[in-house]
Image (cartoon, rainbow, N blue to C red; front, side, top):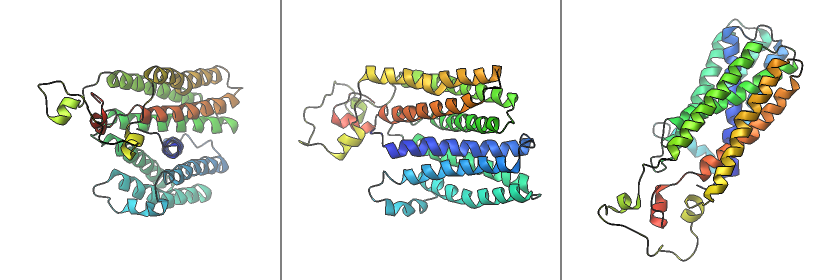
Length: 309
């Protein structure tokens, strides 16, 4: 699949925003934010909503006609994209009420914190299901995609949460341990995903054409000029280049941030390093999401000469 940069920005930035909001809500429910000032809590909430908004706005940029984005709300019963859009819009008034509850210390602050957290997690799941529900793309049609989407968001949002907290002088060593554990769990999930992805068991040109007893190969592509299918679904990248990018991505998303977080855990006097770790992780997640699209192989490629997906 051809990676659209606007979609990469959307999934990475909004994911971090939803993850940060989920951490803020969970912190309120678990009492982790009791030592946080009202200003710090509001700062974390505003940062989360800014990241979410940047992502949602960028998601419309890959549309041929962005003015028709409103149509995504009209198919809630059958479309994961529609569900994502509806829940994303509903989150804004809930988040605004949560911010008001923080500022005025309303008694219902726990309820609003819980709603914000639940809605953030629901939206992350609906976003992931836009891809995981596509049976035409084997690399996406797996429960591991929602699991990884959620893990990436909570990992990047959690790292931002502790980084901003550290700048404000309320760094919690226990939270650093949780973030480090989450990075390791996500790394393990990604390695399992790579292993599964390397063992193709999907459609082949034989199953696509129905000729299962003979060798099938394409004689004529049926067109003499590039088409939409070629550009979007026939995106090709050299296998050795993809492998090198996987290695770079693994270091940027997992290894380097993990090492930097451990450094801060060993010496809490250098909390600024957490911000560096978060920036590196976000850059690595952009690369991961590019790979997520570039390595996806739509079954339509079988009718363009591929032997299997």
